[in-house]
Length: 403
Image (tube, rainbow, N blue to C red; front, side, top):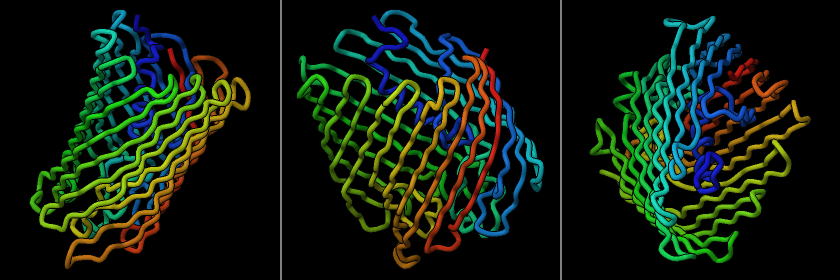
């Protein structure tokens, strides 16, 4: 039997929830789960935020109050004893008190998931998320360098499709096939010409259960990055090989590790390679309280591909949620990224860069349906490329009700 709380898909649900957060809201800290216990929920959140750099500009910052209303409808539940489904639609309406040009924006987020257990040994999990984002949470560093003027429109559309097929070949041996496609489309013509792209990832993972709580993993991945304009100088192909362990103890503590290498073939530029590291852990130390964190070392795309091939990223992240009382929850999140911008031959040398994204929130949950929160977020990018400097602070308060 497969219910909405099935352990078969619990880990995937957590990973997807964390991945979708940046698109769904404008606060970094984890959001407490109110747990109303319904398959269908309708909610409304509204609030106000003071933003001291609404365009994420390196200079001549513009500050404004942002007033927001966020209605949402969601479903999460079993369709039958082998099929689990999720659906979410979120509309975000923003009004800027001080902004040149348009002051009212509507962003949309639509997500869906279907998980099917065909037999006790074969399952498929498919998700899709489509977002139209008009007020990005953490704006592009270096957008001024792309357009040579202050960029007042960093709105974008993004679609991410994921599929994961699992086959248990023997009682202790499993095989997982993975696929991901991410599509970026920016509204601004200059940004679109520079960084509109599709990212495709294919992977095959083999697992062996050493102990009931300990699993050995070997994995190979292949990634293609296709730029829709000027791809002959920007496209990349990357192969990954890695191995690691997955550890889960009594639903309280989990640890995932992947160590390996990646080999990147760049169009019209020299190829390169690098170690690949992916570490994450989570500890649920009390009801409504957890601590999670991790580290990633890999190549990622940069917002200024005219000067840089890509970014070699070190990413450290920590998330905490602590129930001070059953009705009051404090939460926080910090991401720190010491990175290297890999310069293009004859155009730019490589540059060092440090990025910090942090947020805290205090939430009061007087009933399973009402929530009140105050939040603070901070973005700081310090770079040897001065056009990429960014400093942004946001302070807000909001109230929400779930029907």
